[in-house]
Image (cartoon, rainbow, N blue to C red; front, top):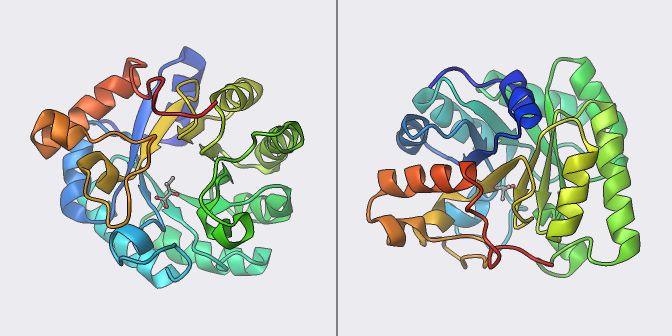
Length: 264
Ligand code: KIV
């Protein structure tokens, strides 16, 4: 696979070419994912749930993400590698800079932060200091205790309008990717069309530029539960390689996510 950069994804958005993405936590799977032409990998703080067996992501540390980022980078030199900034590691712009530096030095190409307009100054500060940012909107799992559970976001008109405004503000502050999690498909489509930067969706319908899934979910082996918007490709294909190749093909061809893998 040729090296994937943000310019690759920007060009694909312009061409209308969809792309797949997966979470990854170690070198062996990262190597397999790169061989299957997955262009974007995320060391997600979902590792708190799928690797550490916790009920949420709040106990994940910057060191945890840095460790797994190093491992994933060792297995995949050509993917665009995003690393999650854990809970409270970006509470202030200064903290964000210090912690993002750790993740960039571990091999990340971009960091991902959860939140809306309150992050504008942080995104500006990071991007002005050469740290590319993906901003995560919608169901932001670090806010599970504010939301009172893992629930679809942006269903009422005010929340939907706020999410559109937040996405534009974050893009204008310098975010180079917006990730939408558990958002009604019409809202995700509206945001994708309104933005110049690529939008990656998870449980956000098939109109986004990219899709991402947690690798354990496509294998049907997540420690807690498998979300309804995911798909067990391992059961369908019988091998890990086949599962990933089929996922990539279905996303690229606009087959996944289908009608039963999203929300209205
Ligand atoms: O932590 C993670 O794996 C994520 C994805 C679900 C997008 O944020």
